[in-house]
Image 1 (cartoon, rainbow, N blue to C red):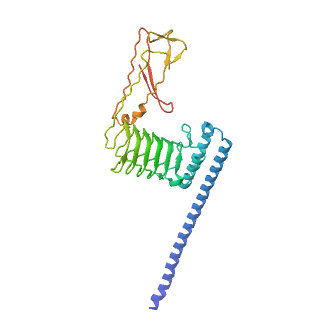
Image 2 (cartoon, rainbow, N blue to C red):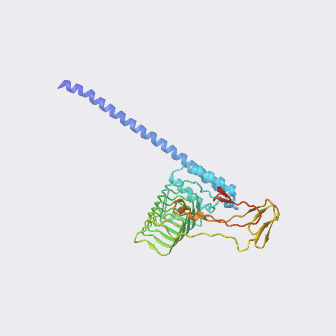
Image 3 (cartoon, one colour):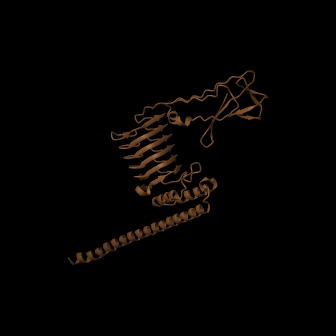
Length: 343
């Protein structure tokens, strides 16, 4: 009995020492993690404060026509992207609200939000009011905009995938070339809203109220409209419906005026072409004529890309003894040439 007791005492001390050592290591690790987290948070706060101060000062120094000056907007854009790469979701949200309150969200072509990452931010109720603003190129992936008001707002090339928009009101809003797949529109009110070139696959419009909705070139595959969805007025064209079928598809026809004129033609060399009997006649060889036509085939791109519609281009022309060459050039949104056809 004495032998067992004498052996048990060192064993107990050894176990106690081991447990104490493990506990100390765990506490030390927690303290290190807290120190690291605190240091990171202090760094984020410093970045946030510096950004707010810099942009506020820059805005105050350039009040006149700030949103119309491309170079100045590039500066704000670069500062915004750099800050967002460091910040957490709460401070990202505050940057968005700061830009709104500073009236810096009114530009489309030179948007300071292009490629800006606001994914997973949460806004709701009184802080979530947007009037006459433009969100162009922003990333709102998995965001939450609950019980918000969007009035006279444009979303262009905006990523809203998997976002929660429940209870929000959209009035006079445009979604242009946006990705809104699997977004939640529960209990929303949409009035005078246009979706153009936008994907809404598996979006959920349960209990939503839809009034004066325009859907052009939209993918609605498996979108949800339940028996409580109120559809007051809806127009849909060139779109894929929830069941995979297709809506009305418009034909597109562009033709010159019955009697040809020099209007809208760019002629090189100048004054080398004239109109005779409704015909363009070149005075010298090697004349170049150019004309840009607004051909909105992008508004039918979803069906074409899905191989469910064909785009056919037909050019009719006639000439006498002169040899001519016709080049058809497709130019994209940012003046990028897609393809050249020669005849």
